[in-house]
Amino acid sequence: MSEAYIVDAVRTAGGRRGGRLANWHPVDLAAQVLNAIVDRTGVDPAAVDDVLMGCVSQGGEQTGNVGRNAVLASKLPESVPGVSLDRQCGSSQQAVHFAAQAVMSGTQDIIIAAGVESMTRVPMFSTSVMYKKGGLGAGQSPEINRKYDNFQFSQFAGAEMMVEKYGLNKDELDQFALLSHQRAMAAVEAGAFRDEIIPVHLRDADGNPTDEMHAQDEGIRFDASIEGIRGVKLLQEGGVISAANASQICDGASAVMVVNEAGLKKLGVEPLARIHTMTVLGSDPVIMLEGPIPATELALKRAGMTMSDIDLYEVNEAFASVPLAWLKVLHADPERLNVHGGAIALGHPLGATGAKLMATLLNALKQQGKRYGLQTMCEGGGTANVTIVERL
Figure 1 (cartoon, rainbow, N blue to C red):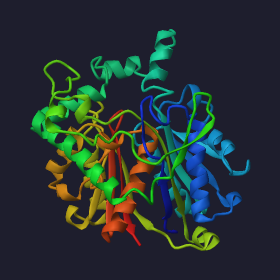
Figure 2: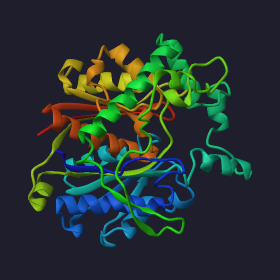
Figure 3: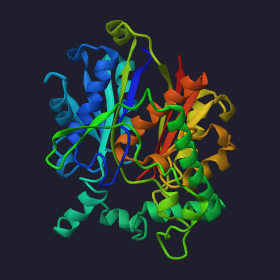
């Protein structure tokens, strides 16, 4: 069986809700990362076998197969197909996995795994809420309700459950949130994101490009303080989760090019990394967010590795309680975790986050001269993907 290699990974800088990317149609924003990765790799656009696009809120401007629409809006020819994937927050990480499996099988040689989410233009939960309000029902079926005692699955409730189950407290969450901003600030000042971010023109209210470029993550609070974070209103009375210690709503797009040996020959380039191990695992949908813990344990077992073998980790900061619990159970080194900050500072553009984190992880490994990286994230419905990569 062939190996799966990553030859490039790019992302846009994150845009805050209603911010600098708000006037971009998500299809056109996704086309920007497709164009960028084609240009940077020098691939013949017609040689791309498929585009796999992660997207969570597939309604409105993100409906009608956003992956195929992004291809049509890009410089890729019409002969290149595209498909849209929804594994909730892990959608574009799953796109990387599916791409790797395809090239390893030899049925395809060059695939772009990508993701997009405009949380400004297609708000989180809008697809389910609008259908429910229209009398068209909801995804949580009567059989699920019977099985789980009518519990309404909620990531916010799950985040609070994580705090209680793993013995965390609000001060730990808030301190972690501050560290996310501090690490992101340091990364910006050091130019650490320069190789992964592709600048895009701001667009005016009519969608026309302006001369101003967006090249820096908009969510980083350069004036962040522990006092300010502690003072943010809690999401529920008596809880410890606030908007300050949870991921930021964000607009963005990302892309990773995955190839096999035949693809490397077609491109004539050296790979950045080899995909070493891929795992996806389901877990309790009630607490929902603890999936990265058993999924990481399974991935390490399959890889024949221990946490000490992994040089850097990216664990998505959906809520601070997730990476903190992950660190605690796995006895992982906090100095190796999200070294350039995470979603609390940089934002979490849902369907784009998986490929976005891969771009950040690969660049951090390169900059630090490290070998092995691990990426994981919690996902709606109690699922988690884990990817272990080896930098080459």
